[in-house]
Amino acid sequence: MKSYIKCKRGILENLEGLKSFKDVNKEVENFFTPKAIKAASVHDILCVLEGPGLAKILSSLRACKIPKPYYDYKDVIRKQITKVMGLNTKDMVFFIDNTIYVKFFASVDTPKEGDRRACGLDKDTLEKYKQEFFKGTKHKEIALKYIAYFVKDIISFKKINPLQFKKAFIPIFVNLLEIIVLEHTDFEDTKYIRGFSYYLLREIFDDLMLHVAEDIFFGFANQEKKAIEFLSYFSVHERIDENGVRYKANPILDESSHAWNMTTIRSTMLQHKKAKQAFYDKKNVLIATKEKLEKHYAIKEELERQKEAKDMDFEELKKKIEGIHSTLQKLRENDSEDVRFKEDGEERTYKRKPLIKRMFKKEDDYLSQRQVLKQITSDLEKRISNKQKDIDIWEKKYIEYEVELTTIEQKGHPVDKKYESMKIALAKALTRH
Image (cartoon, rainbow, N blue to C red; front, side):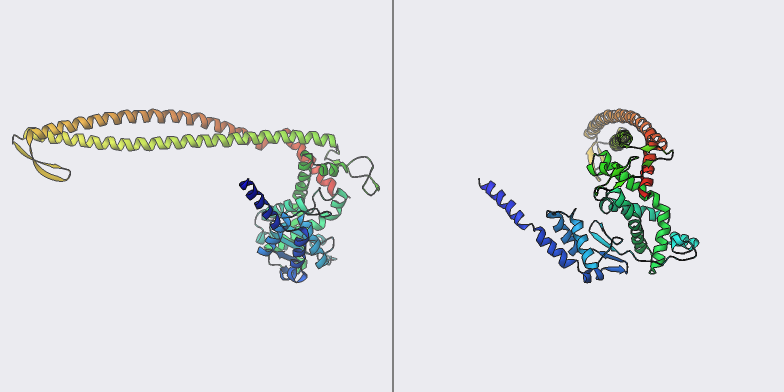
């Protein structure tokens, strides 16, 4: 009974320590003020909020129950920042772990001459900047890392429908690239930031869209209601949206103008999921085989160390036996009753006959020890030989599994092409107006 009361009291104390949403929301209002956000500015169009104070508020928000109409704790903060900073639909509040980016969408004049898509900036100049600030595919790697957060939060199929996505994704992608440019360059001029962002975005736009499409299909494969609803917008038939407005959505068409419907998508996703699972299973077998092989290697190395130590002991005994033989030879050649003999570093006088007996006794002991060592060494040699046979078997298996996996990775599963075609088709459908 006492332990129950103690346990119950501990639970009550923990519950009392939790803050209500009203209290946490007050903290949010006090923390996210125009002055605080302005102080976090790294540029006129970007503020980066982080630190222990923010981490504490995020922790409190995650711990309390978020009421409707908020989608999650991020919406609470997003609403407060939007209110105090007067954000519009093209501005963005973006979360990465315990860091918040407040990104303002700046207006940039479109030039009458030059590449209008890059704010009139010269392509060679932009390429030079890319080589200077983003070696290789660095910009793509960063963008794909960030887009994963965007897809789960800002343009999630759980929060918006395809029509809303089509209105929002371009400003969102531009904001994403501008954040990356601001973080990794020393540009101050908004025209250069925007132009360079456009330049990089054109290069990785398809990759970003494919990531969005993959996320939707992943949700669909896991039978998420919102993902199913999202994909149901794409149809060859006229539909009615949640506001009662009739529309004919763009169908998901592949390169052969074949329309993907819910049935063909579901079938392809099931096949793709099975193929991926089979591939992961084979990969796990390869990993397990490698671990098994490494264990065999370790055991063999340990046995070889033991044998090496025994070989050294054997050589040491051999020298001792040879030393005794040399001593006995000298004793046979000497007729004196008393002889001088050095033992354990000390030379003393011994009676010749008792000393000979002692030498014979030592020789017997060393010979017995040598025989035992021979047997141990022989056993170790057999174990090493057997372990090598195990290694040969597992090495063969490992090579076979590795070749099989490499072949699958190079050629891919037949359904992979079908899945990629479906992803490209959805990505294009999402961008069509």
